[in-house]
Length: 148
Image: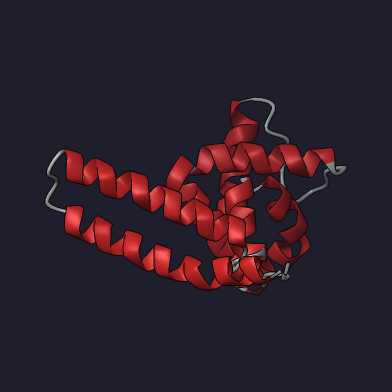
């Protein structure tokens, strides 16, 4: 079931994405999506280095929510943000209890745990515990799918 995330949740998703790929990538993707929708004054086109730098700064400021003005702008841009986000991040916000997301988390945890065990990493136990947690979260979803 899809839900509509709050501005704060969208901002957290944008911040999380930026930690993974960098604000430059986020700014460019955001500016491109914004321009596809007709553009405006909030985010400049990222067509050159200056535009990329400005888009990066604007997105970072707006989704930093550091004041009522930026919260208002973030509200106006929430739909753009959702379309700019990678599919996985969007699903985490709109469908946090979806079977697809639960399966993806199990597969990621399994890969991380097996890699850690294979190289005898000191964090292997933690990775295995995370895998167990993800598998336990998948049990009610699997039971629900089996009963349909």
